[in-house]
Length: 233
Ligand code: CTP
Ligand code: MG
Image (cartoon, rainbow, N blue to C red; front, side):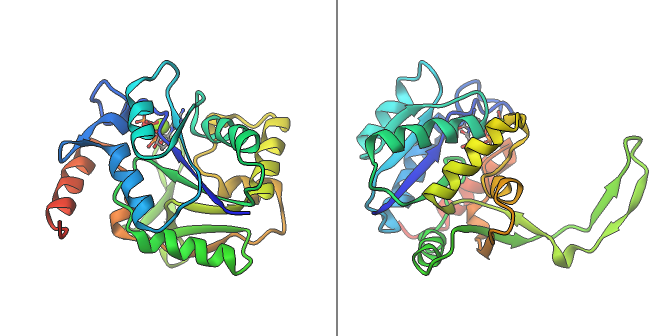
């Protein structure tokens, strides 16, 4: 079976503050989702691409279809959106054995990050996560803001997407999280579900990329415009 890609784009973009779903916000005149889908094709991924969209969406769905991807109505949280896409994948692509889950908001992720994740899955890994070292000094604090001390940052990594999984594994940990009553709003990525619900399964980290940052706040959009200007056309 082949690789599928799930692009999660059903969020509202509250922190970016444009009043429209973030994946619709324009970057160099084109929606973030379009940049994300082009990146996936540039990486040579030819399998099915599913895009989670907000309920009632028309525009993101049209963008998805225009780029050969299929829209799926997402859920109230990122984890629920992934779950909706996995259900649709089981229905429409029963031969799929592996999946990449990618944030539409990481729309400038270079092709080599996708390829690295895919290569490790092909080599037999079941959960692969791109990461970067953290640049700031990290400190734990209590509820009152008192420092509990500095954390050794050399053992810390910031987590990116695309995250790659054996499809049966990802399905089973999402099901286990739902059965355990985990608050889906507290689940910020998929690999954490593997650690919580498939103990003993290795989550392999691979090098991420600075350009795979998530467009979250207004400053991130300024950075994205600058990255695009610096890219060869
Ligand atoms: N996402 C999703 N379904 C949701 C929430 C988020 O598919 N219910 C997607 C977003 O579209 C985004 C990715 O998950 O591509 C990462 O989420 P985040 O950066 O938090 O995006 P938003 O939830 O849209 O932003 P905010 O939290 O600021 O509202
Ligand atoms: Mg969010």
